[in-house]
Length: 206
Image (cartoon, rainbow, N blue to C red; front, top):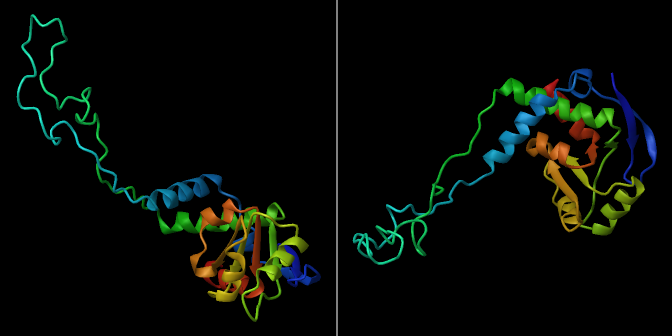
């Protein structure tokens, strides 16, 4: 079983915590992580882009000038792509970018991402993270204690005080466990997670 340090929010080590082998100690599958990240980013795309082809723009319908004798290149319609206000070649149209992946692959990728954080010593488990009121100074102090810059903070439940305290800090994000995904785990250098959040992850994925 992987064992990592357990810290308080002041950055002091208060003990160790054993993580579930089948969640935080699996064989890392880079291919699965790549496919899941591609799918997550694709699924965020709106796909609402739309421009007009030469069949849809207004104008045209009559030959601009006669075929021969003018000294100019032959032209058939002002709707041709080379004309200003003409149609767009291979015009982008609304489409669905969604990619569906098997649940088993998503689980493998999620566990691989968590394991990679353990292997790279980028995971920090907190005993607890409670704030009486939104206070950015508290989060900045905690990040300074762990020498963390680009950081993802994971809480067991939605925590408004923690979210409001961290939202204006550049490179820092706060997510509850149920919103956690492979892309966000890999995107940030440090992965700060509460002990309660670890229990929830293990409960779902073990």
